[in-house]
Image (cartoon, each protein chain N blue to C red):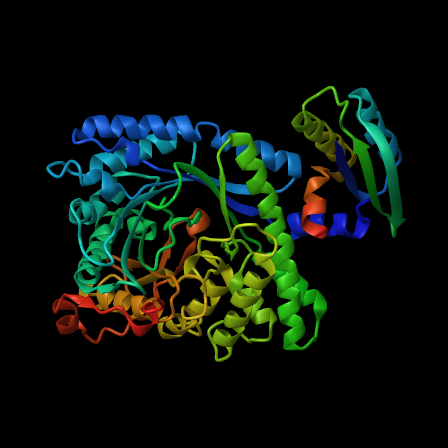
Length: 89
Length: 452
């Protein structure tokens, strides 16, 4: 079961590290990461496997959203099905 | 693998363009709660709603969290209460309204719809008493919504009911005059009412529906407007295509939520209602879509054509995205709930006569319109009759949700707060249809009804 974590906001040191660290703590495996910095704006999309996640999904969403707020960036954690539903026939 | 452009587009739709699933509405049949002892019937109603929909709000919140898409309302619709009231004719049906309100409060839903009667061909036992009780029921409850179906393409228009509803709407407003006449905002008069509509205030669980079912209403006017803005100066065929593609995406999100809600609640999936439902929030307006198509302001000439295109394209895009489509499905034009409509009405660019024309091509009808407090019941009945005639002849749903602003006149404002919004009191042509309305009887079903 996969989820998509997106991080959008002003670039600063350690965003990727902090998000990855949160994932590792709860057994969420990172499958793929794409990131770009355009004119100081940071955009990262991370595909993760939540099959072995040790906490309920809602808790993972809350902890990463909170981490994002600490860093001044916007974090979304969403089940991949929403993207498949909206963009694939 | 999902493309990053698609991911960012979805997030932009949710964060900036107000994409949401407007409502998960659980339809619950109360036919097994009928009892000639009203107290026993009320207890069965309360128990059944709490048992069937006890997990509705929590499940909705969980789905919202998993998929990152807001689900604004979790609601319940029930069998038209007139059918239950029929079994206990000597008791006031208001008791049912109070128990629905209590159950809604217990399970945490913000509205429960179905304080309703279906009288398009005439009044059965229970119907008249229920209609008579609507003003009191809506004044002593917070969360109960009421609707009455007074006409259909198959049956014609019950003019006795039309006459009655003019008076009932006025009385409902009068009894809640201290709260901006909010009672009338929870009362809809329909022609061709759908039995599976998930949207309030007109939702009820029709007698042809299963015991329990989950219906979902989608939304997203802001997303459609943004997609058109991004496309720039394209021709009108391209506009229709953009609306279709956007509606498809919105509806797929709704379908996913519907399937998931059905699975988690162990209740069959009913329909997705493909609607563009506005809210008073900036960036969530149907009027602004029409203006994005090229109108100076909603209500000017060209509005009906733009709305017809929008309504049709929403359906074409949405219909492939869902396995079952139903409810109202189209663009809503509730005046006080739409920031663009409110502005246009304040400027007197959008008038009641233009709105009537628009209802021939939109999904519902004259919706959330504040009218002067001295509008006679006969004139309200005349408005209902005209609107029902449009629905009857065009084989479509039409509805009237008017709020007589007791003690106020045209140009002043009503403010309901929240999603019901606010807006100016619109001018009404007060020429009397009293004699026509007082004739009673039934307008025969039109030729369009003879399809067999």
